[in-house]
Amino acid sequence: MHFLPDTQPRPFWWLLVALWCFATTDREVFGQEPVKELILPGESFLIGDRAAFILWPEPAKRRDPQPWVMYAPTLPAYPDTHERWMHQKFLDAGVAVAGIDVGEAYGSPNGNEGLTALYEHLIQKRGFAAKPVLFGRSRGGLWVSSWAIKNPDKVAGIIAIYPVFDLTTYPGVEKAAPAFGLTSETMSDQLQQWNPIAGASVLPTAKIPVAIIHGDVDTVVPLEQNSQTLARIYADAGEASLMSLEVVSGQGHNFWQGFFRSQSLVDQAIRWATRN
Image 1 (cartoon, rainbow, N blue to C red):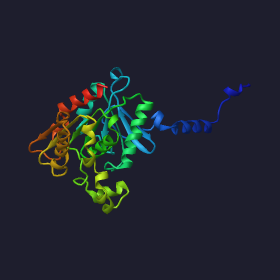
Image 2 (cartoon, rainbow, N blue to C red; image 1 turned 60 degrees about the horizontal axis):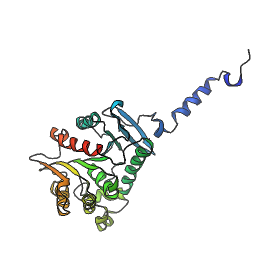
Image 3 (spheres, rainbow, N blue to C red; image 1 turned 30 degrees about the horizontal axis):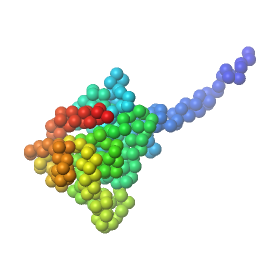
């Protein structure tokens, strides 16, 4: 029996080669390799060598362009189940959630490059809206505030749960310095350049709305040097109306359900994300 060239049977090794080629095709585009466990339906993929994720609204609720929340800190354990309620509320409203793992970046330029890579991927390849809402939990506050300061024209708003804005309070200059490629001595000398709270006046100037919930006995991320200082910066700029700070009496840096089921944070994030 004769076969045409394009219908000849292939040996078994040819099938293995074909499968290998498909499996190693650009994972950023095809999303074939799950690189992160997710708390809600979505996809995980690589952007360069960094693990990224998208939590997707169900198809009927998606939009064009797709409104979204940029979440931080995306680390192997985050977002976690404590935030499931909030993220589900976003998805129910047709708002996607996305993040990228930049390691313990503490608001460094390297970390900001990772967030920018995520932003550009979602805007250019996924049809996402040009202005996401940024969501920073704890040290994620350093991530989102530093990125917003560098990219104020790309931010619809910021929400946060007991966020860090002053890296001298957490993780401290000595621990943060290596992420910036600096010695602790050099970083101390250049602190005004690298500490997000020192440059935060950019945010009210750009009229970026902010909503935060923070406990008044937080010893890990002190309220006064972080959220309250940002509130004063907004007030001094004449933009106090853009800054909402809920101070929870008797709560610290913990898993109290009220932090993670704040309807006010959810409502404001959805409103800001969908108004563009």
